[in-house]
Image (tube, rainbow, N blue to C red; front, side, top):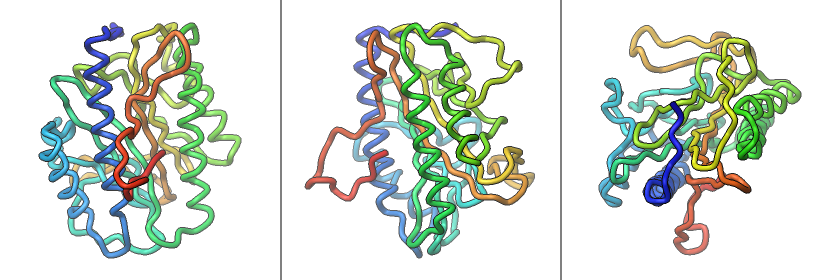
Length: 264
């Protein structure tokens, strides 16, 4: 069942989304050559304490960190550790918080130093695909309109959409109904009409090569591309309204202008 959120619930989700985006943007701004992924996780941990929220991912089905950090051919669910980021890497950061029982969830991919043109384009197209999907998150449209818009933009740009992982509803649980695939398939026959009050985490995962992926047999979490090609990931938590979609994971707090924060 898809839940439609009340004004009370939406106020809490807006706050959860704002804090999620604020922390994630600050972590993204700290990405530089020579920093380790565990240092980025420590930044997220410190910010979670500062804002007095809970990290959504830590402990979720046993995940050991506060933020998922996926580098280059890693698609999603990368575990922070001693890995040093180097010039030319691209880094997917996926993060969420729980605020008074409600979840925010967002992701951004950033480059480290000088990034190859083909990988900058991969990130650009993935970000554009997210916004193509968000633009379809309107009352009266169907769920598949989001999926179709994302897939069309990605494939017309020469990239591929990951099939094995999808977006999702969100609210009092991180993963609620419905699943939000980034492509159209007969496997997803559930295609509800979108209604005001629905909240969706829309998150295209896009590969430079083929769409096939695999899960690490070592840590049982890290997902990589099957062919070793690079991958990018962008995500926002979105509210369906009677008018334009509302982005719940948007930074609204400014610290000294842009304050060293990343916006997407």
